[in-house]
Every structure is written in C-alpha cells, then in structure tokens.
Image 1: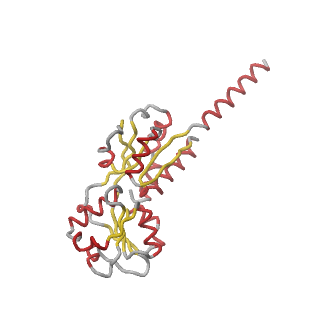
Image 2: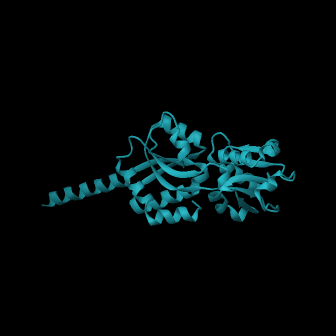
Image 3: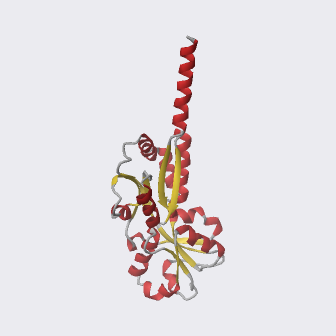
Length: 241
C-alpha cells in the first residue's frame, strides 16, 4: 500500500512539473507590446502556462516566425497578416481596432493633424512606412490628406512605434506618428496627441493569427479561450483597442 501511495505521489509530482513546464511562443508588432505583454502575464497567472514573447516591426516578426517554425500566434494587423507568403494561418482571433494618432513632445502645441504643414514641425517621426502597421497607416494619411508633398522632406523614419515614442520623449522630434495604445502608455511623458480621422487610412483590425499546425495544441486553445474572456477585453479596452 505504501509503495502504491508513493507511486501516486511521484506521478502527481511529475504531472505537476509537466504542466508547469508548458510553454507557448507568440510574436507581436512592437506597437502592441504593452497590451500583449499584459495579456500574457494575466494568462500565465490564470493557467500556469508560460508565454515566450517576440516583438518587433511586423516584417521582422513574420520573418522570425517563418524561420523558427516555433511561433504559434502572431498578433498584428489582419490585412497585413492575411497577405503574408510562406506562412499559413488556421484562424484569426479578433482583438479590436488600431487607431493612429500624431503626438507631440512636451513644450510644444498641436491642436490638429493638419498643422503638420507648418514649418515649425521640422522633424516628424514615422514608423517604418514599409514594414510597420502604423508607418503604413501614417503614409496613407499623409497621402490622402495632401500633406505628403509638404512634409516628405521632414520625415524621420524609425523602425518601430516605440522608437518614435523615444524620439518624442527625448524631444528629438517635433511630432511623431504612433498608435493610440502607445500614446496612452506614455501620455505623462509627452505633450499630448491628436487622433487621426480613421477615414484617412485603411482600417486596422488587430487580431491574433494562429499559425496552421498549432491550432490543436492545448496551450494555443487555452490562450484563445482567455482572449475571449471579460478580463482580456478589459485589458484591451484600457489600451484603446
């Protein structure tokens, strides 16, 4: 009997160790590092599943996912992910919508996006217009608002949204395009921000793209279920998504 109980105890401990060792690898655009990181932390506390995280501009994130073949979910713009080659998605979990803003450093004024035409905004930071979601959106806005030919020579390209934020916080630029999520996170470190008319750039649907082959894994299923809970929705709402 004692041997049987000891065996049960050992099996229980092994089961516990296996469960605690469960891990999941996700990736996301740098502009959504804060909310995704908080979602992962809340998920880990609730399930005990550890989430490894990769952040960067979307082109780099997708490239890492393609090369490693270990990334299970990519968080980003649906339109961008849906067009990715050599990476198939089994499904997309909707999270919300991304919103573009133009922010200013402390000590400056900007009451409307159209004021960027003024020469006092000599340095305007923009995330990578070819690879970053909000760099693409900012480029569309400048083109559709007819501001592009006026400010093109003043644009200072950064790799990611957080890099634009760093320029704004340090005062190295006079204005910068970032997403509302980032603006809310750094609002005490900058002078303010103004939202861009969403009709002047393509809709940004933020999703969790589940890479084909991972959809049946228990860890992925658990994260998907968590993303649909009121707790997850509250986190996303707080970050302006």
